Length: 500
Image (cartoon, rainbow, N blue to C red):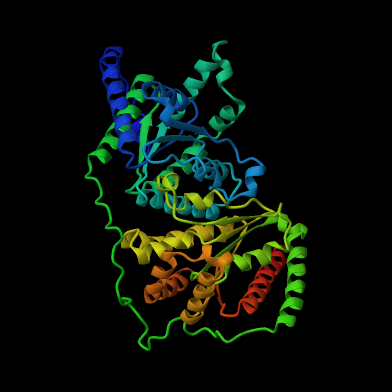
């Protein structure tokens, strides 16, 4: 991977003085076109051998372009408070929006390479982390992000010479840290592991760009030219054609079971509970949930509860019965509506990553990331390729959360068309409930068969062992609330028991 970056690439001063002003002007023009068109974001990963000039190169890029539209982030070792979130949480938070450039030091490659090179984690875990990175980067590419992965390289001999040069001068000796001295002593191990990391993650959508770092002029011009050419190639591509607003949903679902029996139709909607029994069991289950939320073992977990369902299925009232049992400092309720302008400028899952709770806390989602395979699919707000891709991305997202200590509990509150119509009429005729019913609710009702098909596909493709769907027949709200509470308590108890 690194042979061509160990042959002594150099640029003489005359060539530098000739090319630097031209490249600088071209980069600035490119940056403002990128900002003006705001078609995609650019993420630059800065990795490589210590003392290979990574920081100096990024400083030059910021000097050549307008730093107001560049977000440079440097990540150190994972801090204790960051360990209370999934590993990728801190990187999701700083992704640039469309039209902007993000430069990331100490990014998602740094810890896996360092941990494996120093023997702190097994090869199996290292390979698993690389696979997770590949999935993440493919998702970014599919969302339109231009990902540039720079590796600044020095041979072992050049790295030793560079360190000695800096240490021999009182003016620059401070630039060599104990960590860099330690890393140089383990140069061979780091290069072996880095070589494997680059090979396994140099995917077609985001190949590694290796730059020899011994000569600053060569390094600056190479990085700048690669950035310029990559962005200009993307800008030269035709603008994507906007989707019709909306795409017409098929009148009849494209694929149905031969007997026409759907998952939702197979539910037992006759389940009910007497009022007195409901009140007694509600109090008991809320008390059980409260005790579980205060269990010390929950400090090693976080809780995500997802509520989906047809309009008027009772999501809001069910959530209120849960929160009545919880300390307000423990949870957060996130109602999910159509994405705003800022959210549309980011990868789809970005707006949900922001609300993933830290250990010892919970987030309750009133609708969720499943909107892409439900309303966006049926209403034609995204392409078929987008919602088909979303099943895999959602499964990977939930698997990553689960592996990081997040307990995911997903509920689909199912009601019959007849019960929905009754509730719609009740809302329309009740002054203090009329705000709950909208023209959109009636339009969605007209597409019941399409939604029923989308729901069945969603459950079939995303109900996994780590994050299964719990389908709750909800024609009787009292029975539904008790079922949700009991299921949630059972899932938390099993998770706590697994923790010991």
